[in-house]
Figure 1 (cartoon, rainbow, N blue to C red):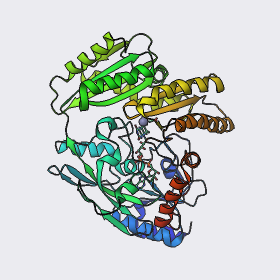
Figure 2 (figure 1 turned 90 degrees about the vertical axis):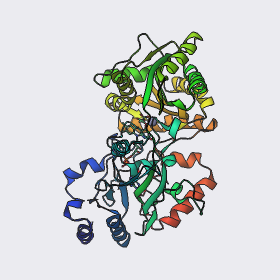
Figure 3 (figure 1 turned 180 degrees about the horizontal axis):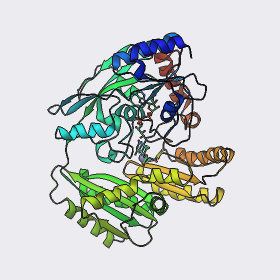
Figure 4 (figure 1 turned 180 degrees about the vertical axis):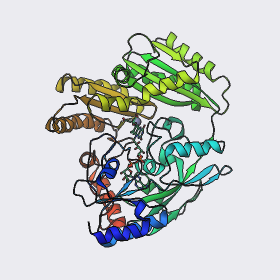
Length: 468
Ligand code: FAD
Ligand code: MLT
Ligand code: ZN
């Protein structure tokens, strides 16, 4: 990298805004899964939108590629640089301002680098609720959530990140700023630019700020852990609970027995609330601003399905501690997989009505073709989203890992496509699914996306090698 560019970047962000030392760069150049490790000449950490715009102008003038980065918790390799050593990382981790909370409009305006947990906390402090919730909330940023259109465990009731943002501020690849920080629920004045940048994975511009939707805070919840014989039973349970509890059903997560065993083996203190062997488990949560009768409703609803033989057993959390322990068991799955081996990760979406048949078919296909490889199947069944992963031993060679990943992707993704599904529900395409995308998107869809990319980023400097 030209020292001249570094000198100019330092002029914009100050010396403390640059990370040049290789050891200090370590947390920025490798992703959370430890799957992608690249190199960068410099990590640039601007403090505000004006500085981001100046950085982008300098990078454009010098033809320097830019990798935007939030908390670096993404699951698709989108925030890690390649190994050319030419890509600058633009980290938003110094942009952590809650700019405004408007409890009457039920909105909050924030810098993109605010941690998701801090957004949730600021909403709580204002007597409101920001519902986006996921295992990485203590380290991911709202900008990263927007750039990946993250999902998580409350989508069933509140939608994904795209549904939770009313306005954006974006620095374009040429350094211009689009100020779209509008807190409007209705605005029909042309193309949906906000929707375009959400989920664009840093390939069209840098999200620097957002207006987020707030909700009334639920004042209580009821949580249960359920054991059942099959995914079909779990999907039927979902329908029954939706019919009986309506919008009070705010989370519905499924995991196979293997996931539960994996967490118990690799995450300290993880306990399954049920005794006995159950091939599948579900974590169910009801919540409401008027919480009276929630535990009774959950108990009644589960008693009916138990009587009907749809589920085998259920435990309702008797305290907040028990509810938290149930969530720990669910949210420990990601960490447990990293500790247990190398996962071939899938993040698929299907119509909920086709989930159970998909699992049966995919299980049979993988058992026949990849004998003995353990399937780690879990996900947000209430949203039709499965992480249908396959775990390889920790000492698998790089060659075998690559070969098996390609073969497993082909088998699983082809089945998903045949059933009208998507190869990424919430983690995005990044580097992980870039080649897969071309196989499953139509020529017209690819062409439209490439036209948008060329129009906004004609020099191809924004997060090269990701998504497209
Ligand atoms: P990064 O990892 O830093 O970046 C992700 C992508 O967004 C990259 O392409 C990057 O270039 C781009 N980007 C980041 N910030 C900006 C910006 N300001 N402007 C433009 N582009 C930007 N995801 C889910 O959807 N649901 C889950 O349930 C879930 N659970 C998780 C649990 C664990 C334990 C972990 C580690 C991850 C989980 N994730 C989940 C994945 C991840 O946390 C989300 O994708 C999150 O939204 C990424 O945020 P980040 O700030 O870490 O983004
Ligand atoms: C989850 O649902 O826990 C996440 O999306 C993370 C993962 O897939 O590991
Ligand atoms: Zn998930």
